[in-house]
Image (tube, rainbow, N blue to C red):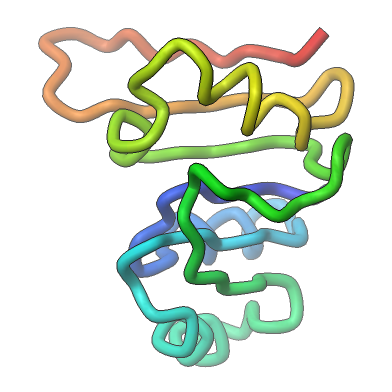
Length: 118
């Protein structure tokens, strides 16, 4: 399984996904150094399955139909808060049937939904 952890920050969610699901995780964040995340991934024993990338989420360089899933925890609202980001930038990178999970901060009640690309 290939997972995009979009806005991963210090990569804790990436480490979890790599350990729990033995997935190949692309840990993308604009502000955190990929070198710093790589050191963290090495210390946790997931560096072989977790690729740290310091990238702008609005300029994803990935091939079409590349990811089985995308996770974004406490970051999607920074780059995906418009009517075009998901459809034009993110969705093309997802395989048919891909899982999409976004978690947003500051919600008064649990509104987590998981979507699949059809």
